[in-house]
Amino acid sequence: MTATLIQTPQPGVVLKNISWQTYESLVNELAQQRGIRLTYDRGTLEIMTPSDPHEGNKQILGRFVETVTEELNVEIRSLGSRTCRREDLARGLEPDQCYYIENERLIRAVNQIDLNEYPPPDLVIEIDITSSSINRMELYASLGVPEVWRYDGSRLIFYQLEGQEYVEREVSPHFPFLSPSEIMGFLEKQENVGETSMIRGFRQWVRSQIQSGE
Image (cartoon, rainbow, N blue to C red; front, side):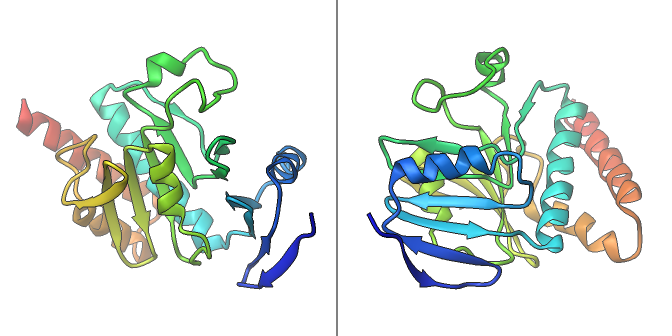
């Protein structure tokens, strides 16, 4: 089967007519190559190199999730940008950040998670500063990811999976006191304060929400 270059979005490329076996080989070969993202959708393969804003925002949003779960004393399993793929769907991708929350206990001792046997991550963070040529939200839906946080550099949206489609929510399904506007308020402080100070302020806010709900 011949691969055909059909598009050259910066900073990546999109190839057509790529077999599942070729995709899996690339995933395995590039496993140690940080900074490369592969998105596969039924023969179409996108190879992306994330920018600094992309990587910075995914780390910070991940810290928000980790801070909330620490303060709530909720066990999670953080798997970063682990590859989520299913051969039966001929689809696969690497989230920017992903977490097991409800299903943490189920997969706690599992070394390598096979999505044919285990559920997908409960929460995924998707940074969409450089738009993908493949509809990644559709891929998350097909994999059954319950919640996605999507950030485009200026707006953060929380989505919950209903059936086969995502519905925008005003608060996080996992953390009902947490809204996109609250997080954006802290993100906007980055111009004036350091990341550590921003997270410290967020942690104090989370504690106040927990105390007020007791």
